[in-house]
Image (spheres, rainbow, N blue to C red):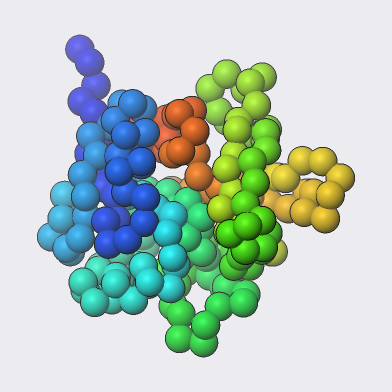
Amino acid sequence: MATPSPIIGILAVQGDVREHARALLAAGAQPTPVRRPQELATVAGLVIPGGESTVIDKLMRAFDLFEPLRTAIAGALPVYGSCAGMILLAREILDAPADQQTLSGMDLTVRRNAFGRQVDSFETDLTFVGLRDPQRLLRAVFIRAPWVERHGPGVEVLARVPGTGPAAGRVVAARQGDLLVTSFHPEVTGDTRVHEFFVGMVRARRA
């Protein structure tokens, strides 16, 4: 008997919601937008998409989602944050406006816009621990991306920037328990393996 597809919400207040919805669908989940606390209560996992982290922070509070989401994270709801989502899941943010808040889910210090401005966006191939077909590198798209400046002992590093440049070795994907973050945008490349990885986390939590 086939396992039912898990219902995974996408925080739909700002950012690249449709791209994540397509990737989740291809990865075997049922995506649904989340804008209200009662919608959050119906999902088995949640994606916080890329976008503008300061705007998403303010809109989460305006939609009365901030505290319910913090409570859900404390209750082990699986959450995946990409780019802005990584910033919002971190415990500490560097180079952030004074009034920006985070969900404080992961023991991370994250630097906003660490790679530079929009014109400094780039693509590279990464080794990402735990993906299906591990010999195949993952194409990663970085758009005004953060990186992990510091991580606690409970955080598992999944990917680092390759090469020998000034950003080489920086952590750009990590996991802590039921929380997953990437500083890049796997939803725009057509490679669904990161979303498959997260769907697997959701299925494991449901089991």
